Image 1 (cartoon, rainbow, N blue to C red):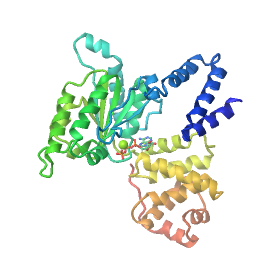
Image 2: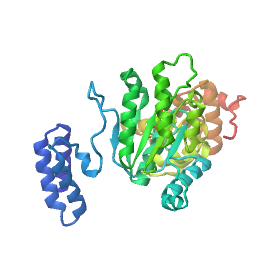
Image 3: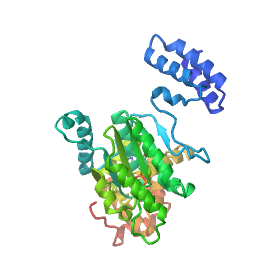
Length: 371
Ligand SMILES: Nc1ncnc2c1ncn2[C@@H]1O[C@H](COP(=O)(O)OP(=O)(O)OP(=O)(O)O)[C@@H](O)[C@H]1O
Ligand SMILES: [Mg+2]
């Protein structure tokens, strides 16, 4: 059986949790690739040998059993092996801060040899969907470190009363081997300690955290991400080596994200122009919104058998909140100027009559500032 048959069968069997079949296909895979890809064959063999002896197969790649809540036995964190992912698109300033962090980590030995600590903690803050979690994944790939994710908002609600204890377990686990610990939705726990609505428990948790962060070991990176930096205690801010604000993408960044999401698509001249207009119009959208827009447009284009250009333009108004008439005016003016399209085409794109389009073009308004 060739690889093209083995792989789908392997995936089906894993999804069905049919371990007997998984093992038998894995053995065949090993036989097929042991000469051409000996290290991959070894890695599979190692995972097979761990399975069924009570350990997670991830142990074979250095991931030990993750901490669980003592009562419910639910896992407190997710642990992912490092994957090489592309760096999200950020401003030059954010990129510079990230590059410095990476470089300083890479030069850890040199820094330590003169008694300086390399940076080991980052606080990422910014609106939802700007790429905070994605940046943690990217750094896990860059450093080849497992990514341990603790979602604090769900931990706090489901383990109220035991959060402090569970948090301690997670922190100890993260410190036990080189890794990146992502404290997601960090504001859920790090609420201002003088907040009147704070429960006594939250205060204890913040104290645990402050103490742990104080002497955090160099081999593990801790990244906290939050949408509500204003809720964070100033003592917490101080504990992080670097706080990075990730803003919404500007026009050029939006265009880059669009281009990335359309990699592999045949870039006609029209599509390139339309991307520029969309990039300009999509002011206020996050990276996540833009990715969603492209995904919806791709689906629409396939199912409605329209071009991707049309689909993108038809989906766009949904993402841009506010006055639709104002949106239509802006869109028509920009498209006319940049794309030189006919009134009829604009009418089809916006689902309006040609006379309405003429009205939009003549009317005042619809001017964009240059962001
Ligand atoms: N700057 C960006 N460049 C490229 N893609 C992005 C960017 N920001 C977000 N995305 C896309 O959106 C998805 C969601 O982003 P992510 O989960 O990192 O946002 P977040 O800032 O962590 O949001 P939240 O605060 O809601 O957790 C990413 O997987 C990525 O595909
Ligand atoms: Mg996130």
